[in-house]
Length: 73
Image 1 (cartoon, rainbow, N blue to C red):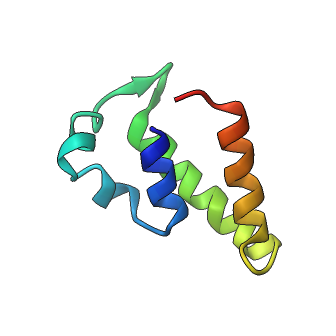
Image 2: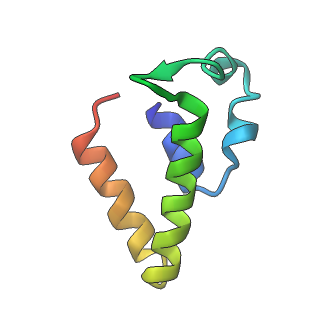
């Protein structure tokens, strides 16, 4: 999942990421009760929200750093 989050951080679309061969198998997978695709799309929108709230990608970077610090892939 870490590589997928990195791709979203770099503005790739979650739907396109899940078409990639190594991620395609995760399309219908769940993390707890949340579908993997839904989680990736939520992360995308949280990056967008941070871009709006904080200028110059600082919010996006803060959010990504917190993901990296707190989530084990």
